[in-house]
Image 1 (cartoon, rainbow, N blue to C red):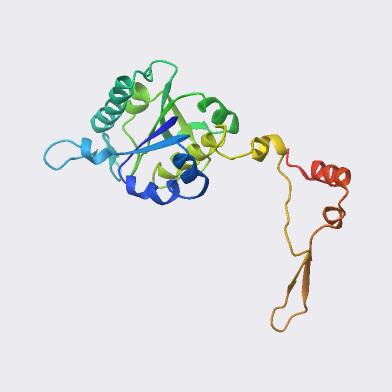
Image 2 (image 1 turned 135 degrees about the horizontal axis):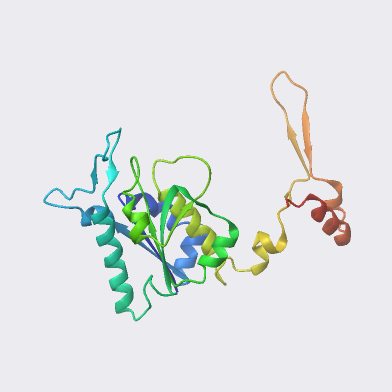
Length: 228
């Protein structure tokens, strides 16, 4: 069973997505396990401080290195107790989500699916102390050329993409788009009538080839429509 350890200041934000649909069923079938790790519990001092203003000045706050280090080490210690090699070996990988990271691809999803444990570090505020990238994370990952409020959404994106590579999660291997291809899909009815007030009626139709029952023509149509 593959385990995703997601270190976050707001682990409760992950719950709804993780318990729904394919990911929820994958957990029920014990194909994957999701372990939300509350960063706050590793905060410093009486007030469990997890962030501080940046050196050199500037707006916002930065997540401190010590709580993240303690959180990752706690996860790794539990992995060791389970007699599984740590992130220093081949069975687990620690990932920091960052706008400066390598852009995540489907090839990365396949690569990461080989690990038994994935440890995700979710940033917040103005970012994460750079020593996390230098000394704790095995790699930095970005999901695109844009900025989000935190690393929770990237963690869910990567978790979903990796989970799809695990046999049994989708039910049918053919459901993987890299196998069946990515092409337009339609369902019943063959015609949808749209009537807007004061405007001419619109009819949205399914392409005739898909209604033909000719599987050879349908396959050719899909190949022509596939995204590269």
